Length: 167
Image 1 (tube, rainbow, N blue to C red):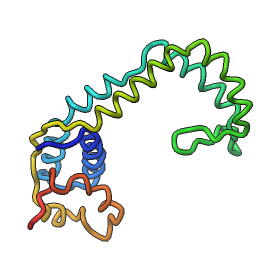
Image 2: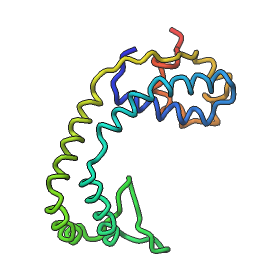
Image 3: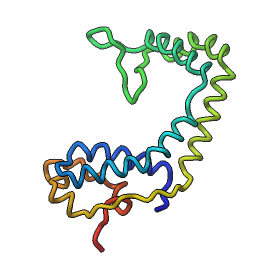
Image 4: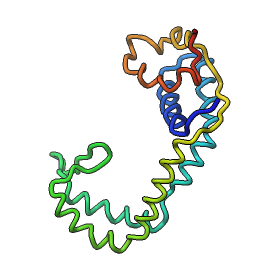
């Protein structure tokens, strides 16, 4: 079946969540089988986007600087929202980071280029022979129930790719 690479990542997340709810050997087998079929594609994309040593050094040095400008919780730990520090003084942070950004300008530009290429790569189609399961298996497993109301949205990438939906 042809799917976009970004869909492969969505399916991976959904299967890993679904695996938490699975109770039968049949469902566990289907999850494991499909995770295995996608593994090479997922690893290849992650490897392609891996930052250079220079960018990793930059990022390692940037972290403590950014942390020092972050709002702290009652324990003194920086507050993080959406994977980023919540910054109190953006202008101050920008000024503090400027020398570091200048020093690592080439590495930053290279990583941005990689990120742009990965974004395009994620839109491309790949062929994966998914192991299908019938939708009623999820119902009999109790996966689709009032116990897991938020799971419905998470399962969306699986519908029609891995979960066979009756016509």
